[in-house]
Structure formats: structure tokens, C-alpha cells
Length: 128
Ligand SMILES: [Zn+2]
Image 1 (cartoon, rainbow, N blue to C red):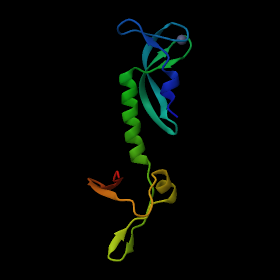
Image 2 (image 1 turned 45 degrees about the horizontal axis):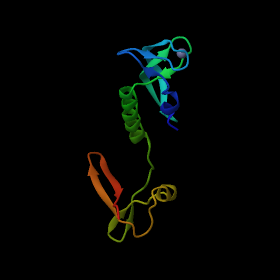
Image 3 (image 1 turned 30 degrees about the horizontal axis):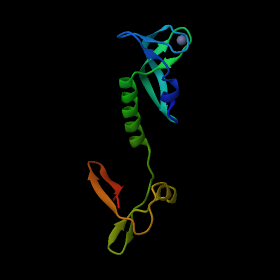
Image 4 (image 1 turned 90 degrees about the vertical axis):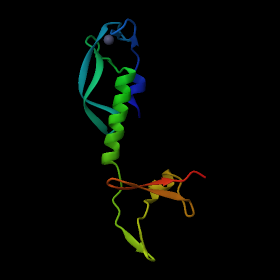
């Protein structure tokens, strides 16, 4: 799923210069118009090094860390489940989708913590 792993094949040989692992040409600093660090979550204008000869793409540790952070922000802003609040007894309740529950290994009796945030709240599993 992480494209960065397989494309990180270049080596930084002299300071400031990056050489292509495929053809050994010096790579140039550029910005990719679009790149999916995580499949299905395209980032735009992504700083990278690109080989002008063979098109190989390379990211420095810093560039990769930056992409990872941008992707995390993107995922958090776009990913989620819509739920209607229901009532159970005298409390309001939000149901957890089955696929999410099984993915997070949640079941009846598991303790979770509700953490208020600026725009609502987060629910986090309490480690046993
Ligand atoms: Zn190359």
C-alpha cells in the first residue's frame, strides 16, 4: 500500500545531490502534480526528486515524512462513518459499524474512552 517503499531506491551520494538507482543520473528536485503515498488518497504538489532520464522518483526522509503527515491529515478529514445518534435509556448512543468493530477488535464489554475535541469527540479503546 505504501508506494514510497518500492520507489525509494536512489542514493544520496554527495551532499545535496541525489543519484538515480536505476540509471545513475543525477536526479532533479521537483514537485509532483499528484502522488498517492497511500492508495486512494492523492496528494497534490508533492516535493520529490525525479530522474530526467528514466523518470524514477525518489523521496528524501524529510519529503517522505512530510507526505506521511499530509496523508494522515487528509485521511482524518475524509475518512469516517456517518451515524445517527440514538437513545438508549437516558443516554445518547452512537452505534459502531460492524466492519469497524471487527477491524478494531471491539466487542461487548470492551472499555473505550471518549475524548472531547474541538469539533466533537474521539473514541479510543482502553488498553487492557
Ligand atoms: Zn534514472
